[in-house]
Length: 540
View 1 (cartoon, rainbow, N blue to C red):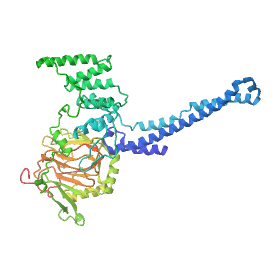
View 2 (view 1 turned 30 degrees about the vertical axis):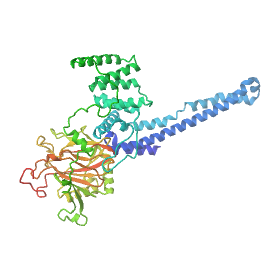
View 3 (view 1 turned 90 degrees about the horizontal axis):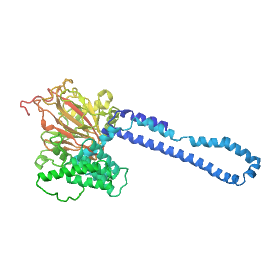
């Protein structure tokens, strides 16, 4: 057990920071921690059972003895051996039994769990994971029942899920409370409704039906559905007439509804039948992202603008980049993914051995991925980017040097002024909402500290297959590129004039099922003067 504890602590030393949910790669360490805790718990149970068995043997033996001794105490003690053994038992053996009963076999288990508790997810992790499920629900049009029953669809070329999982009434109730506490009444309604549905079907739970109805009725009211809020509150009052808020809420809702009816010149509300609330019952509130619907549709594989005419302009080729010596014997396999802007995919860009080594190097360095503040240029975390990343340099391993050289060879661009290789691992619902890789005119200082100009191009290695979700999408022109392990995609962010190509605004779709690993190389302008000469027109 000590060896196991030391091994687990070493594995977990890289995740002492919070936000564990943002990286599947780091969450896997918790799986082994939980396995060790289960083993420790079973050892504790075994010790308790052994202790109880010993106590039971004592009790059984003494029950027989006392039955005989109490039937005729004087005759029993007339035998000197019985008298001696009585003294011995009460002076010594009962003390030993007392020590056995007082011994607490839980000490080892408590000590073990205390060691690991510092590495456990915290409340923010649980909340982050819950919000991630809601994000997946929105992006992939999944109702709460699909999640509750573990029915997650395949995506792209994959189908099905290897491991099923289910949500209980209490799980759904906690999901609803998380949304409610964030004033997200839309999702609160969906999850409280699911909790109520499963409870009505007979599933047992720690939560009370009155609690669920209380949250649900108020959330429905916040969504502007007074008739349904009234029906749910009436049901709450019928279950718990003494509920602290239900009576007052009911009267308030009824007054509001009467006022609305008067304003509409209606004398009476038509009787409403309480129907289950479904995914489309209420409109999802708008948020800060203007292309939200287009972006999410592309993530689902909908709205793609790959026409037969456009497809006819896509080709594949062997790329040796003007007979580069390192590509002559083994040119890179290159496929067109999109014609304009031109996006290509390189096949066999990384070997399995290289991928595993890069992941091994990155894992201890993983930290919550950041974005560059457009006003200050300072790196900061953001809710629209949920992943963990690490930066690797040539000195870390020869493999990094080799990968960087390969990027230079195949793109024909210098990587001397490029950023370090960034490795990213996406966690529960991991995503990066639509963004530009290059800095715009309203953020001229974004890369000023680097002194290498703007990001002229992006080279993206896919280091894992993703079972469902996780596509790279371009909302402006309706493209979706699915992850394929060992391949890489490449595109220019700037025209030859140095102006930004705003069509390249792209996003990493939330990972529905699987673990997504990628590595990015952002190539900058400096050093490309002769490799990619300036154009004569703004959009050349």
